[in-house]
Image 1 (cartoon, rainbow, N blue to C red):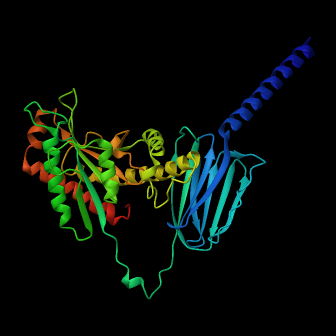
Image 2: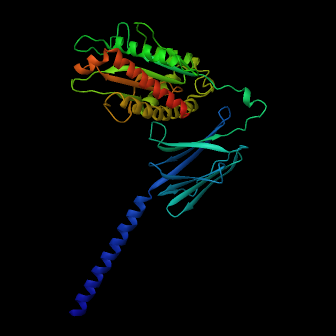
Length: 383
């Protein structure tokens, strides 16, 4: 009887151990259940830019490390598997010395070596209608300038498109005292325009300079005709809660970008210089969609960086309604090739802020804060 009980106990202990090991195995598998499905490489000759896109099932956990000066880069992709059939795409390019992907435990090491020095930036993209999770790496090749001509090259003038919201038959928000948003934002925009005119290397343009209605998509087209480097739409917010207050900054959401690409595809005849000089007129819709998606994703990333600087400047002169950049599908932010932001200066629905918005002092403060934000954005090379 004693031996029988001991045998039962041993069997139970074995079952417990095996069950534990099974769940440990499952948990390890769950940790590394992400899979690298594809690696895409493209080269924009005009911009001297190489784009590498990692396509995965889930968001990629990664770490970057720069090696050997500025000609080599290593990326550690953590907790991710790779199919045995997966291959690095063949890419005939004089600037790419080597592309290598190696498995190390539950991680993948990606090595990029170039024959040229380069700078790089990277960002993650959430799934859209065509792709899953993506990690995007942009390599900017540094071209050596000829010493004979380098002194003759002048820096480009930065063009800032200022868009006073609403106008004409569209008054926008209306405060309790009857203050119309269209009038306030036009006044602030003109003040900003005059401030930027004093800056030597900036050319400001007003999308509207009088009380008239301009359809939203025409505002984008006007900015593109001016070849704007940055588009800023100025507004005054409103809310049911009259206690709501402060300034906000919005940029386009990824969902808004994806839906907008379809509209651009439907009207390709005016797209000769749509994406950095790349026409999509002669491309099939699938390729054109990819080009637009890549361009607009990069534009959103630039807009986000610029908006964070703008928020800091606005916070110096006013309360922030939101300390982070908000993202939404505003039509005026949907240009695929111009970094854009929408600034809600203050709340007209708040009686105290309505009173403040009507004063020259506050309008000048807002205009100066936006000017200072633009100057820092340019100084940091974001646009």
